[in-house]
Image 1 (cartoon, one colour):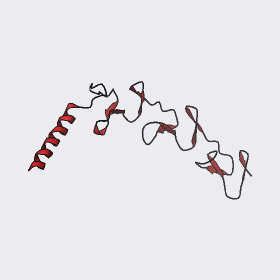
Image 2: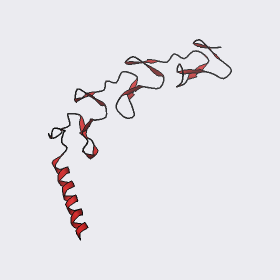
Image 3: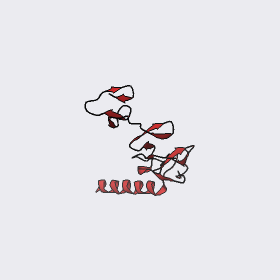
Image 4: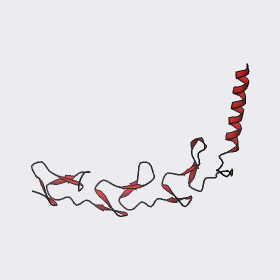
Length: 121
């Protein structure tokens, strides 16, 4: 009987805590900025997919030409056949007798050829 009352009191306390909302260290309620959502379990907020945190706000991630938003939505990555150079994506230059590859310079020599500098001989 006593355990049941303790359990009921604990459930009531937890439900009141969650109903009050998330509070900051100063005791003020935490409010998510525009383009953000509250994290699970009351641990603050995080920016939505396609946005990143900048100065306690959410700024859109600028995706350059020939790129796409990364799988987690926190950054961008170049499309297949393009490589990242600074803040843009440039086409991989494939020499004769080579094919597109994701390793090294972005291409690999065909069977029977070997890489010498930027060509396949």
